[in-house]
Image (cartoon, rainbow, N blue to C red; front, top):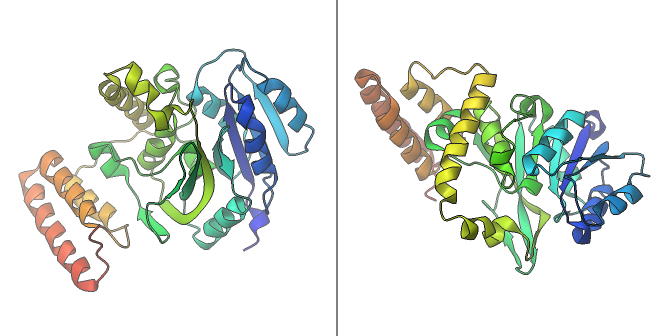
Length: 317
């Protein structure tokens, strides 16, 4: 399949990262396969970011959005998405960097696996900390995850700059109005949102994104946790509010036979891990209202576990 048939959008979100911004934009521009459009959203920076962005907008495939008010990362995702025209949207934080072959590899993956809706890749940490972070040494088909996200809060994805999502999936949950809830860690909205609207997720094992570790990196340094000891408690309620919004937007109703749906979802993972079975067992046991379907679901789950174990597709870790 011709890679050029898929139109791509790269959304770069920036706030006061002038010292890193040029590196991020250059990395998006200097791909071995070019992005059709690069949209830089500046969240009312007070440093020299605007001047830097203006230098790059001379390129034919670069456009900029300058917000008048600082509203946080989610607001930048919203604005960038509304301006994007690509079939697949790639997300890049302004302090991170793409390897030159990132887009080419990602497009090859999407072309090879046409059912892929959501792709994330391994990444390299650089700066204050060095190292490679991988979810696995091989590419993975992670299946669907509506049930395990809705009932167990599963977070199946990675940091913002490793994510790409088909626009037809993104439009089912963006724009999201809860701006104050997600000033930081708005990649939660992308990861959870894609799962809830039925994205089929895949993992690419090549580390093709460089994740910069520095003094102002809020997630890695856990600055927000130090400032607010109740952060995780508050995040739980923010998550509930987010889920409610996305479910209502998509007219989602809880499945009538949760046990049956859970097993069907588990079967979309070609090589399930032991923890996957534990997760769905927990969901069936705790949330299936019908005693008949609870018992039947547990039995079916156990039978499927044995079948996968005997087939050799089972993963211990």
